[in-house]
Length: 617
Image (cartoon, rainbow, N blue to C red; front, side, top):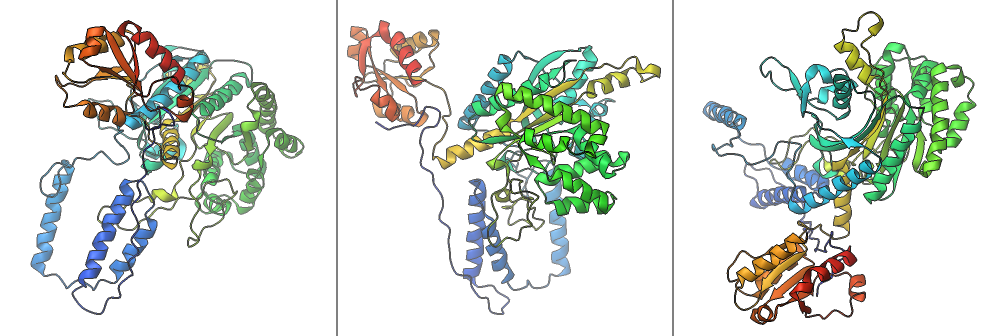
């Protein structure tokens, strides 16, 4: 019988097309290209499309294709009639495309850029991610809410800094200007202010939307799920913050994504560094947004943006650079900053350092201090953060290392992801998108921080913000958001490398018959299993062709148990249960089980199955 490492990831072969290595042809001067060259270009275009569909690198093939196309002779000049005909055809195609139609008036069956359909086996993995996170959130005492997928545009405006350009705006629908939600944090703050809630521990699992450059295979989509956990209310410093970070560590460990690090910083420390360095107050958020790019770009590029694009003095930028290069063990770096006389002359920095000292004490109690990296380059570009900020990264967060032929500028640190390569060249027969996903990492897999003023901003605006601002609510908040798509991308890549594939369904028992169809008996057995809470199926054929086609379904769906009934079993009131897809450990623990199945009374069937299912986990 075939072996399975687990019910969740049955083994499947991993197929990979072989790369052709045909020599490049040298084209002689002629107006008609050699047929071999045309055929090679066509074959290489097909090869690129195949690699793209299987989410494999194709950069080398694109380079080779460009080299081949460069050998083509220039086309003959077009006549005025040909130019006009092509122009008219292009206009017609654009009109059809606007209606979802192709060049020949046919409907184009595709999903919008930056979105994707998920197959059953993919959805199984995602369901496990959701349930794992929800169980942890509930364990920490949270309740859940739901909010509209779109908000009034004024609610979202001015909350996301430079990322505001990524918000999806909707057309006017009867006088209200709306936008799709960018995250779940701002809607939560609006929810608290609108309902007058001053304390709440909530989680929210829902879709959000961003007009970002997508990289589907790395979990960067325009429509994606976030799983948020937030604590709202006035509490003692760093107590809820420490629990949030504890929840984050518990969640990532339970998801089994591998090794991870949580980078942490404090907005007050960062603001103190900016003030000490001489950054004008009006430029603080703009400079913070530039610093936030240090995980993707080297310091030289970030400095250039500060000086040339944002108008910062070069000496000021250099002073910032001395601090934002510092990172490492939390207590050790904290001690170094506490001994910095100049920094300790800045009130906001002193407040931030005091918070961090308290936080490290609480994190040690929760047993997750060793997961933290105190990183002064972490800025989190969103405008609403006011205190502690953090994000979780893994080895997959950074892009793959470049090939030796690539020219790469060293980043600010060896752990920072490299700057993504974005191609601006034309696509190859629609096979290549703007972004080469083989050069992109998944980025941070979770992030968050403290935002003490967002709820008050909404309540104050709703009350008119008059004298004394009596309508302003004081509701400090801190939270974390886990990026489901990026966690999913990591788990699927792990499964691919292990040559494993997740199951597409959770069926535990398949009921089949030999000889006569016995459809009524199969229905009766399934109903008995369903009533006992056991997931079961049977073939929708009165007389299945043979036993093999039924076992083929068991093999295809990796169903762990098969119940076999024939005329003799029906007469005797028995069933034969055959256990499938066992790991070596399960086989070792089940030596007493007959390879042909276990014959038992039908009255014993449910109890036996529940016991075996429990043992298999």
